[in-house]
Image (cartoon, rainbow, N blue to C red):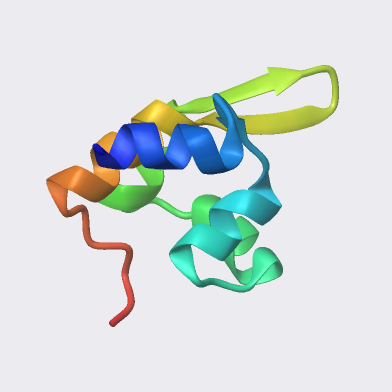
Length: 76
């Protein structure tokens, strides 16, 4: 099973900020703050962002592709 298929099965086609924070093992507030800064990984994640009204989602397939490409998320 590919990373994309596994994540879509786990989270569905769109992920919430909570889902993304859990996946990246980051605190939700810390991730939100990090995503507001300029960095290679934040630009890539923000490009996958979709808004529906006030709700913000991230495309699971795009996040899986970033994980597969080995984008450094700024922590060890």
